[in-house]
Image (tube, rainbow, N blue to C red; front, side, top):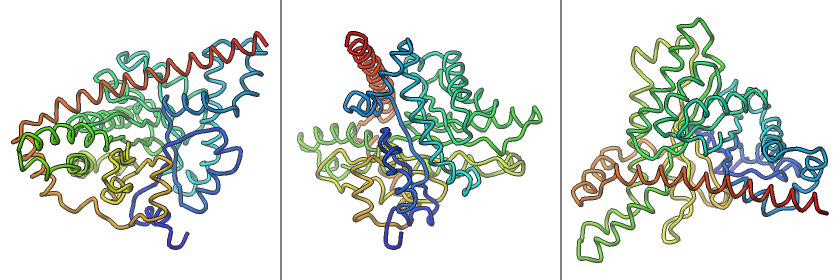
Length: 373
C-alpha cells in the first residue's frame, strides 16, 4: 500500500468506493485484492452498470440457464442475477464493515428507477431488497426526487441504510440530509437504536461541468471574456458548497443530541467523478475533493489513473470563498444553475430507467434464447 495514493485516502478521512459491478470482480478475487492493495472501502452499482455487465458478458450465462430451467419469471431472473451479485460483493466487503465498525464496507443497490415518482412503491421495494439481501452492509439507493425525500425519511426511521442518489444541487442535498436527520429523530423517539443506521448522499460532480461548460463556451464564442475563465470550475465549487452545508447540518445542538445516541453523520459521496472533457486532468474530480467524512465512488479508468498519478492530500477545505465567488460570477453571466441541476436530475432518472428497461429486455431476449435452444 505504501506510495499508493488510493490507499492513502482513508488516512485523510475519505473512503474510496468502486463505481462498478461485474460478477468476475468477485469470482476472480479482484475485489479482495483491491481491498488489500488499494484500501478499497465499498462499491456502488446502478441500472446502467448492470445493463452493461449482463448484456456485454457471458459470465451470467450459466446462472441465466439455471433460472430459466427453474421456470423463473423475468423479475425473478433479474433478482437472481443482480441481487446475487450485490450479495456476493457485500460478503467480500463484510470484513471492511466489521473492521471499520459499520463506517464502511457498504455495497449499494438501486431501487427500480421506474419507481422514482412513487414514494410508497420505493419504500416497499427498498424493504423487499433489504430483507432479501439480509446483510448489514448493504445500502439501498433512493433517487433525490421529490417523491424520494419522504421515502428516505421512512426507510431511515425503520433502520434501513440508504444511499440517496442523483443529487446535483446544494438545495436538494440539504433536503435529503434533513430527511436522514428526521428519520433518525423518529427512530430515536420510538426508543430504537440509531447506531446501526448509515447513509451517504451521492452528490454528482462532472455532469455539472458538462452542462455549465457548454453554456460558458457559447458565451466565450460570442465575445464574453469572463466566461472562458470559469470553465471546469462550477462542479468543484458546487461540491465544496455542499460540503460547507454538510458541516453546518451535522453540528450544533440538534445533531449533537443524535450523536450522543451513537448516530453517524450522513457522509457526502462524490459521484460521477470520471472526467468527461479530455482537456481536463483525468483525476480532476478526485484530487480537488479530498476531505474528512467523505466518500468518492470512482469509475474504473479514473480509479487506475488516480492510483498511478493522483495526489493524496486534503483539498476539499481549500477555496471556499472562491467557490462562492464562482457561483456569483455564473449568476452574473445569466447561467441558471437551479434550472441546470433540475434538468440533470430529470435526465438522470430517465437515463437509469432506460438502462433498467434495456436490461429487462436483454434478460427477456436471453431467456427466449435459452427456452428455444
